Image (cartoon, rainbow, N blue to C red; front, side):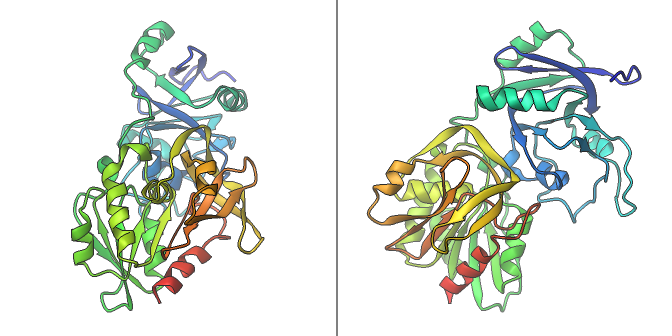
Length: 366
């Protein structure tokens, strides 16, 4: 597909593999960890999810940008969090009359560099087999050797602590102040729809920065603690692990999602590891081992908890299992009112199969 009017761009993978295409978004250079998302809708929610901080997203659906963007309503945080984007066909125009603008304009304003016009099926199959790796995209440097040298400066996701960079820097509240339940939210990179899901169920939420001390959370006098999703390596976050340990000692209900699931596991003495390829998309099958039912889930994570250590733990049981690769998708403590899931029950975007988990948390607080 020839588009001579469009600037050329290069995508170079960490192992030296090169893909040629055309520029989208801002003209420039950007690097990060490349990963693919299998969702068919909700690209704006994906790009504004803080859990994607530092990553380059490959969208597997063919057309991106065709319905434009909506400010506020379809943003999961204050701005775009991805480092770059890769897709097959990028539409600079849009057809939705409710849209506030084009994705091209949105990316330009957010300084996001991207590439399109490449065979994303070939790319996804390649990184699926080779495993997650860093990459670099450029529409100003078209010499692959120069980009390979630049790529050496992109940090590896393993060992990176990123939550303190994307979380709120000041506390804020959501919900009715006279609500029955008060929830202290530890923001490790939380999505807006998660906090809204709690508020919609009658919780008054106070959201705290990632490195907030436990004593400050406790001073809010919460009925329960929520540990959010977020980016980076959970093993590089001993401060959050210690906070969760102290929260568990209060015997108050605790609910963790995604990174919060991994932090609860670490606080329980269970290790984590970086996956060959993470789970990202809104069509992942998970079995609820308590009910025996299967849920179609929305996911975004590149780390997982060590299954053998969960199985051997006297006070932890598995509640949810991924049906694609048998990784642990949910746990609960037998000795504490605490549970967590690896996936995203708020599902923004995605199916609503798992929103009952917010109800379970409210029930625990009752």
